[in-house]
Length: 250
Ligand SMILES: Cc1cc2nc3c(=O)[nH]c(=O)nc-3n(C[C@H](O)[C@H](O)[C@H](O)COP(=O)(O)O)c2cc1C
Image (cartoon, rainbow, N blue to C red; front, side, top):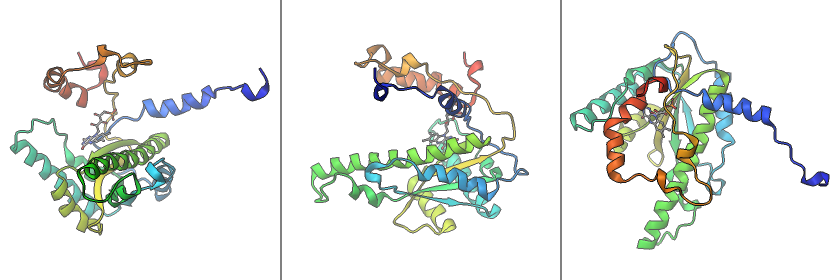
């Protein structure tokens, strides 16, 4: 083998990354008395900035909320949205969104969906165009998620814990949250990223095993679930894996 074919994996660097990846643990209440300095916010968003995106469009923007009054109003929106869902009998195990206002690191994730035009679309209003547009929307969402995830990992690398909150109840969320943050109507608030020092010790949630999530060469049908099996999972297991330490999931 000549020198050009040699490759030495950097296992120490991999392990350092995996330490961050494994120990990013969702936390839903923070110590409001331990501030996150602006420098750390910028370090976190510096990671977001380097993310990959379809067509390198970078269709994201991050609004850092520092005003306690605005944090409280956003928390109130989510608390109200959660009770609305409960009234509709959605049966989704909802966390206490009051925790939002405790987060010293509070970043609103904004997506510019007009950038679907940067991806392969026809823009002629045809049925085929609708399919391409749906695909373009997926590209856009994945791009924003890639950037957001980089930010979450950077916050975890600094030693904070994180919370990913979806701006659910789309139209209402936009109407309630946009004016608080001066977000133009053309843009969409899609997530909130919270981080800080956890109020209680965080815990590791259940994760599927590697053989459950991967196949070599062909999809391994032993990992295929029918809709009935998924419904069973939602009924019997979901609530356990959302709010419990993996060691305590039976
Ligand atoms: C796209 C996405 C949306 C999420 N939305 C919410 C949310 O709206 N509210 C919430 O409390 N947690 C939300 N989470 C956090 C998940 O519940 C959490 O990641 C999951 O239970 C696994 O726990 P872990 O992050 O500790 O591994 C979201 C996570 C992701 C990736």
